[in-house]
Amino acid sequence: MHTHTRLIMLVTFVCGFVLIGNAQAPDTMWTRRYGGSGEDDGSSVQQTSDGGYIIAGVTTSFGAGNYDIYLIKTDVHGDTLFSKAFGGGDWDVGHCVQQTSDGGYIITGQVNGDVSLIKTDADGNKQWEKIFGGGEEDIGLSLQKTSDGGYVIAGGTYSFGAGNQDVYLIKTNAFGDTLWTKTFGGSNNDIGTSIHQTNDGGYIIVGSTASFGAGYYDVYLIKTNANGDTLFTKTFGGAINDVGSSVQQTNDGGYIVAGSTASFSVGYYDFYLFKTDSSGNILFANTFGRTDDDISSSVQQTSDGCYIMAGSTEIFGYNYVYLIKTDANGDTVWTKTIERNSECYSVQQSNDGGYIIVGSKYSSVGSNYDVYLIKLAPEQVGVNDENNLAGTFSLAQNYPNPFNPQTTISFTVVETRHGVSLRIYNLLGQEVATLINNEIMQAGRHEIQFDASRLSSGVYYYRLQAGTFTETKKMVLMK
Image (cartoon, rainbow, N blue to C red; front, side, top):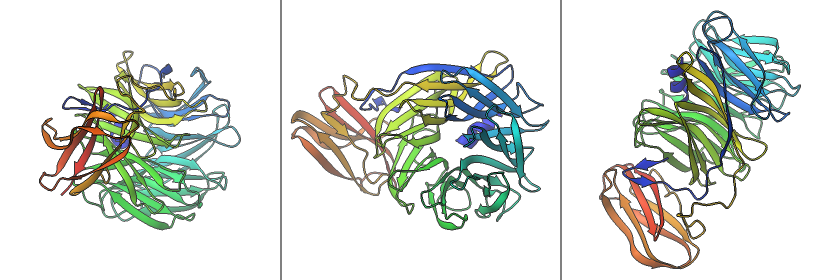
């Protein structure tokens, strides 16, 4: 189960370069673990109206047998108020949970191969359950309460659609009764992993497609109207595998998307973050990763207009929770790695300005995983790395990225500085271009055009140096 979940969900240290953010990551306030002697995973977390948290996931420690949906309610300190298991003797998994307007909870997932929608009261007692699907396997991965008081579910279906697996969209009323269903996709496998209702009453869905795009799998972005009719579809990616995991409409009416990329990665997979306008056109695209697997699972716009992205990173064969805070342009503000033998599936900003994270952590009891809840403190605005000289220099992500063959690199100098260098390196750490060589730079914003006509397609790094200040970012050349 754990490997299967990781594949559905599908700091930077390469060649001796360290990506340094402009602020310190917030401290961990506390961590909690939930479960028994079996395997227990947390896939979704939301802060509740009382300041506590509600978690949905899967358990083999409790319930009717095999895998059951796992619902955990905690207080503001993460201490358990109640836990519930729902399911039968087969494979039952909870993927997403939200608090409802009456103080209860709504959960979607999979029960015995069908999409499940479960409504509970405030104490976690089941009030009703609805099942959706056909004769083949169908799954619900993402859920949102809608403005009309009902619910919308996104996932995948083998029962309906154009062939193999298709994106499955289900709209219900407040009682879980079906109002309409839609499928999207082609003759190969397509799935929807995240859904968000948009300001116009429609929906934005992200997932993955093997039917369309440039590679085996591409990120699949679908915009619909309020009736589920397609307004546009977009694919993003390269020649290998690229998958979408999370989408949210941003304050400017565009969309922020997180996923994982093998097409533009240093390792097997890298975090993939991109921003589009309201029509789905790319505004920026950045990747973050080490030399092994980096799997992004969740993104949210934060109260300061920035973005928090979370997932898992592999370091020397061990998985760690990994978080990246970026600014509004997708440039790194800070990164944080938490706990060996742990994984992250969901992050949300909490009411105090900190962050709540859920996933799983390896347990010595029964040699399985426990649900793992992490609370980060509010950020300390203005606290910086003493070696970074933030406020003097800032290096932006090149644009466009990926590019062919020209791109613009910009940086800001607040005061005149001597001995500034900007150099380009390949993956072996070899310098391939010098754009600025120990020069005097005046205060202000500077833009440098880089022409990579003579270089081969691939991943490169550009590094800005001035005294003790060093910052490195990644760029992708695609010819």
